[in-house]
Length: 355
Image (tube, rainbow, N blue to C red):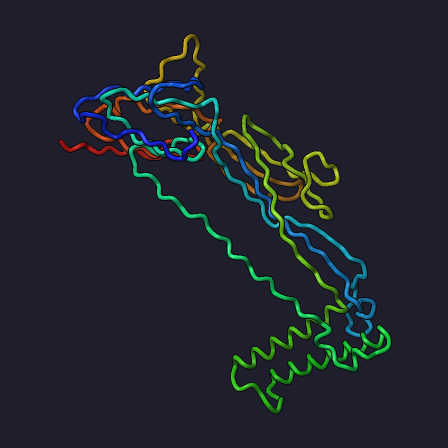
């Protein structure tokens, strides 16, 4: 089904006459009037947040110790990555092996069904969920970095050598620091009139000092980047490689040996008893099929650090059950809510029809 919502008739002909609503395994061909729905299977999505830091040496980095007593200032551009956060979640995707067809017969009290955009069952006999407008991302204004040369005096700009310019810039930095100190002590002739004005003046002096100091200390630019990996659980997994990571290169693929492995472990907690496999001819489906997901423990870690740890509901570690057809064949409306991410049953309500 291409549409996100499938509607079935709520009352056909007479409310006092009831017939069966037949459910069958979907045959993949044209069938009689009804609706096809799918149950989901679970995949685990890992999201890795990283930051790349790039150090750019200052123009006067080799004079940093001489004029500002800044030691260990590198004159080489450097890059390094770090993992800032790891998140994971279980999401449901359509399971082609669990697709069912609800056939509607005449004079039936047929349910109103809501499906997700992927055809996964969501509700029965409930008002359709309101459409949620997509959240518009507001672009973040990038702050313009001040140009250090805008704070240089004529004497600095006219200096004949880089060593002389560095010396004069350092003196200007010391002057700015003296001005800030005098303001904080209230030792200037024309003090700002109020606290807000004083704060503004100090912020401007801080900006000037930072821009000039970075000519010696250099700057560090940061860039955030996220990666997503998906895992389709089928069984217990012990210490498998999810991805690799290098401080120099960032997040890498599983087979890229330039990075160190980041592992994951998945353990079926066996919260749902295993069903005995059916033998012989498959039994006729006598109602609406839904998932009973099982719980699993999932963790992501390196050889030194645990990055993520949580429990998830996984459909592959559970079983299926059936809402008996008799629920929908009485003089009442049964309202059912499913979890579209697992296909599990959340809630059942019954509403008696008025005569």
